[in-house]
Length: 153
Image (cartoon, rainbow, N blue to C red; front, side, top):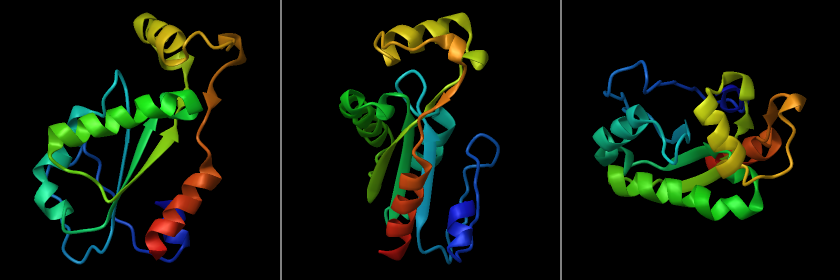
């Protein structure tokens, strides 16, 4: 939102976890959707919002930022794309553009089971020392560039 505003655009935020399912899309010329992936899927509240607004969203250019740890690694991009494909199948909506975004490691926030999943499945036993703390994989410059390209297209 901050980057779009800095580019001179008006931004209206809608949080699928807090706000109702009604999106006021009148006067909107572009939509940016963003959601993280946990346990192989985007949040149900996000998918429910997208599904309920699919017809309106189909009439607008849409950019989806799908954030996952898998997207942080070249060998994980194919799997990260399956999360988007499965969301599209469930919601009946396919965004105009999709950007797979590398997420972050936040071991302090994980429960034991989540830490195990991240450690052995998402990281695929890569050499990462949890004692190093959290690690951000998001390439913020690339994200801003993709937003700029989308907005100016």
